[in-house]
Image 1: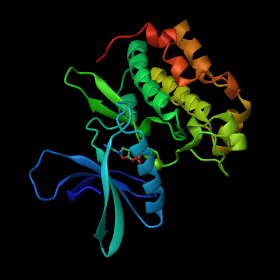
Image 2: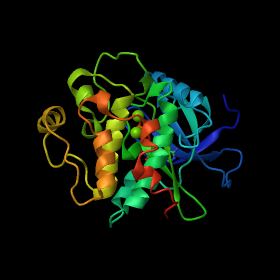
Image 3: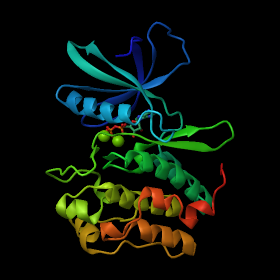
Image 4: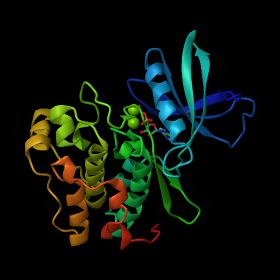
Length: 268
Ligand code: ADP
Ligand code: MG
Ligand code: MG
């Protein structure tokens, strides 16, 4: 439990399970020391506690959001469970994708490498199960580049443990997760492929279709690799988006793919 109590300010995000606020220490009203506090009350607090356990286990990885502690507050006579996270001033990767203009392949490779480093750490023990731009936080650096960190372990699970139903965000979901509820490390790699397409083209991998068509496309269709990109980027995408999950490369292997290695420069 952390001892400092945090005063919540504006909302950064909210879902059906809880809310994320910017917060500062309540005993220092003018502090510039801000954090993000993710909160939920019972019964959703139970899954937030599990999420916190994943974050504690992954502490120290530079590409995973750091958790400073947790506490319980009482708000409107309700017990609220709070997780104190480092605050990402740059928003999420969705915000970067939404900036007009295309990202260069070099920049995409620079961002992809950071996501792969995070995944490489996660995959030693866990599957994230919800890799998507809105769950990747952005930390602007002094040199003008952005550092990325993976967040939102709300759907994460242990490697090798079977789950009883599908979970995730459909458009980033792999064929085996949608069809059979199979979620293993290779599932996160598929989602990464979807994100790389979205960074390169500015558009989602599957577009303008109904939920049923989307399920059909994911399970039976072939993901469309953009044509107007370099051969090396195409090859990288094929390694992520192999329909047979056993054929997908691991995060550790993808870190040494030429798309990543040939673009080893910091890009602002
Ligand atoms: P949910 O499980 O509801 O999706 P997330 O952990 O993804 O919760 O947080 C929801 C949103 O809140 C994120 O998409 C992001 O916009 C914002 N957010 C979450 N954590 C932080 C943080 N540490 N710093 C800044 N913004 C954050
Ligand atoms: Mg989220
Ligand atoms: Mg979540």
